[in-house]
Structure formats: C-alpha cells, structure tokens
Length: 384
Image (cartoon, rainbow, N blue to C red):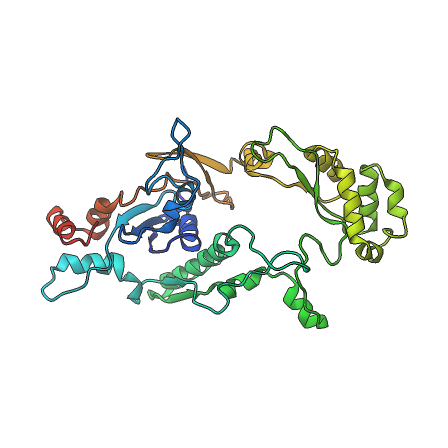
C-alpha cells in the first residue's frame, strides 16, 4: 500500500460525540495516529447510542463497545483510559506528571496546535427548518455536528499543523459552531444584503424553481421497514417543466395558464404539487428517476439506508463502504474517506477501539513509561 499523507502525525483526541471524533477520524484515515483519551468516570455518550450490534438470537448486545454510531466515527484509533480528575499533589512521582503532560495538558504547551470546539451560546436551542406555515422542527440529528463542523475542524487543524511545521510554534484554534454553520446558509444572507428581503423556511420548495420537491411513488415491498418511495425533481425552467409533464403523460397540462410560467406555477404551487404527486404515485421510483434523467431533468431517488449500503451503483463502484471485523460488534460497514487522493489515498485502517484497549501501548510506546510506573498509575487510579 502507498504511504498516506499524514503518517508520522500524532493526534490526542479528547473530544466526544460528533464533530471532534469525526474530524479526528478523517485525520486517522489519512495516516495520523489518533489516541482517543477516554475515562470510565465519564463515558462518551455516543458509546451508548443505537444502533447496537445484535446477537444471533436477535437481541441487542450491550456494553461500551458495540454502538455502531461510535464505531463508525472512531475507526482505527487507539483508546487510552485516563482519569484526568486525579489532582497533582506535593511529592507526586515524576511519571504521574509525565502522563498528564503527554496526555492531559499537551494542549497548553506552545509547541503544539490544539483545538477547542463549540461554545455556550444563546442560540444553542434554536431550530429553524420546516414549512413557513408551521413551527420550526429538528431534522432528526444535529446536522452541523456531523457534516459542517468536522470539515472545518480538519481544515483548521491542518492549517495550524502547517504553521507549526514552518515556525515550530503551536496555537489555539477556536471553532464555535455558529460561525461554522453560517457557511451552510447558501444565498440567504446575500439575498438580504442585495434586496432587503428576509428569507424564511420553504420546506422542499425553491424560490426560482417549480415544481421542486419530493414526490411520492409506488411502494416497494422489498424495501425493508421502509416501503414508501420518493423521487426528488427540480424544474429550473419552463422547458424542463414541459419535459416532466411529458414523461408523466400529461404534456397538455404544461401549457395550462396556471402552470405555463414560473410565476404562474409559484402562484398555484399547492395545486401543481398535488397533480404531480397523483401522476408519480403509480411509478416505480427508480424507473421514474431514469426516465426524467433521460429527458434532461434533474431527478433522484430519495434513498434509505438499504439503498445506500446495498443498491447504490456509484457507492458500490467506488467501494465507499469498507468492512472491518470488530472484536465485540462483529463485521461492520464503515464510511471511508470521501476524497480520493490518486497517489496517497486514505482508507479505514481498522475497527474502532474497545474502551481503554490501548492504554498499556500508549503508556509504554508513546509516553515511555516502565511497567512499574504503569502499575503505580493503575494503583493510584490515574489509569483506569
């Protein structure tokens, strides 16, 4: 295998749940040695979040090591179990201080970059997606934590690392979520600046396209636990709308005065979407998607987890999901690096660590402690 671009870089990962671990996972996939600092005195909550691996009898496994959520975001890392709540005291052995210096306080030294993510804010409870006539609601997960923030974190840490390589100096990188998330607002702020309007929630609709949304297709009994099927369609101009109506067998409607221009379609959007839904209801989603794409209309199937893992031809061809064997969870599929470097590609280097699995290795190989020193730390409760 070719050498990965971040080999030789070592990362101490004190983060938990989403943004931090995902960012560190990206660094790990591209060659960094990532040491996950954990403690049984305050276990990372994502270790206890579904989905859990299952036993042969169909029951869920239990414990800190079988969460698919945790395992997907921590592949290839080392896990060191350390109690950072133990306090310095007069006469404390030197190797106690060495552990804290190497694993607990390295972020304070000017030689290394360190990142502090998130910030307590008056905005922490706000949610603002949905339809304009309804109250805002969440989208099922904390989208910024798993998509936007990790990407910005990786970029910022690599920039700080480059600065260290050039100057020998570290620095603190602050990454509050608000500043990171506003990058995903698209044209909303620009629209306010340009014409003074204040965009609001639009659901699946688009101010300049119509019809634009997800439309119900025929159920698929082979889709496990999720038989309803949908196709998303984006008509960017009158010509695309005419082609959609033609594919669906209602080309005459495209010339109707209620729908023959963008302004007319926006004025009658509820009625238009009702008609399109009635036309798509008898189509198999994949067949309708193919027909619309062949007609030059942007369209796609709304995929569920089964589609992504087992059916999607692009992901299969790219071998995006990589499988590893985990000591307790068994065979698992994991997200691989989204970016492919032609000369130094990244990959999933191994399964997620068991809680504290590499404590001895980190103490001996990385920190340089002797077995007697490690035994002393275990007895004192510094290592757990």
